[in-house]
Length: 610
Image (cartoon, rainbow, N blue to C red; front, top):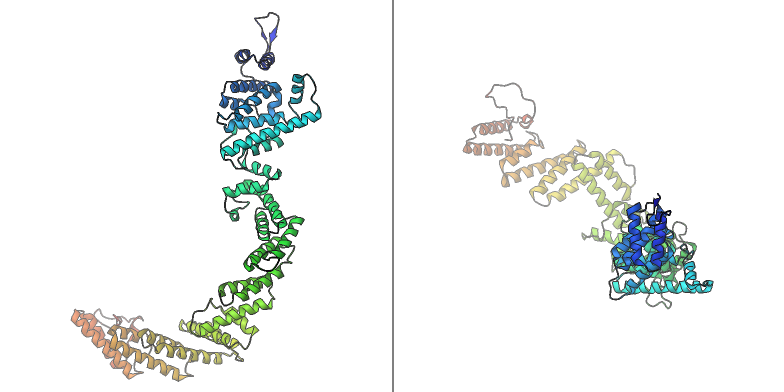
């Protein structure tokens, strides 16, 4: 848009003319002229919308704000570093000088916005490609060209002075290397990353970019120290964790670098810890790093003279090295296996749990290692002896492990005895629950593993199972308690069911046990307990006179008690049941069986129990 200049007829003025005039006035320090020109520009043309004009306008506004100490305005107005080449270099330089002076003024508080502004401006001016022709500006002001040597030397000195100033401010402000302004300055010299208007108290560049710059600048130790201060548990550093994702790559590289440093210093444990943490963060070990890991694995936990060796540190280090080198290289598996076996033997008696773990880990690494297998077998033998002596074993014994021991050592009597008890318990438990198939299977397992020779026919298996049940019943009854007597009855009942008519003496033992329990209940429990035992159909009515008499007496006693309570119907039913038992007529079959049609007042004993 073009407008007539009323001051000078025949001339026209454009936004570019006004910006040129404002920049010339600014460079001549005629600041009283600059602001009216910018105000006229805005009044007549509006705020410039074209990119170059807008950059020139905002750069002038930013410089003017800085002159009068309005630093929030100066920071907000400053163009982005990518657009600064559109602004007048003299204006940018003047703003950069003012900003740097403020940072160096001890009487003022240096804020992040001002630091970011200085970093952006000076990184632009001192860029080695000189996009703003800063060197040409100096040549114009010196009225003589700036030699290459002098330019490079002056540029380097100025970069160093700004670095020293920012570092001093970082120390004063207590900023670590990740949040340091000096770190942001170094990153900005490489590529534009700082945005003044986005500057916050935690850092001028994103954390990941700060970490990458520290790594690229060879400051991996400073990076790790700062990050460890923020996150004290390196074991929790993981590439996929939200708190660590941004810094995962530079952290991994820094850890690998420090691992190399530790290896060169012969600090093997520290080297392996750092290499392991680097791998956990996604770092893939290079050839030299793998060589360092292998060297550390060979020497970790050892001293040059053999004194002060640490078996624990050696095992931990070998584990790390072995894991790092897999799957391409398993050369450390043998060293780790040997160390595990040796340590397992050393603590066999003093720390059996650790000893077992050492032998077990050795077998995972080397499944055919005889010493590791022998160590575990010795622990199992010790546990078997404890169990057979009635003591608590150091670790739960598993049938699979005992069977394996018996295969390797057929003459191991404790293993054979434990298996016999194990299969006996399974067989008895299954039979008492009515699972004859499972009980027979357990018996066959016992026959197989305790040294007996086949065949394993059903008759032989049943004979053994019956004997096991009879023995278990004898042990249960020996307690003399009601629970033990009931258990004996159940076991002998299962034995009688399996034996059938072939071994009639088992049935006789069962009946005797039932009678003994009934008499015990008659003396110590209620009549209903005796009746309940009778209704379980353990002995049929008429088969044993003493049992019938005991049950009949129980019915009569309960009838008398019911009469006293006013339960005449219940008493009548109990007397009827007692009469039928006395006559040798089965009564328990009517408890839940079908009932014939009868008159309302008929009583057939259906509710005999109650």
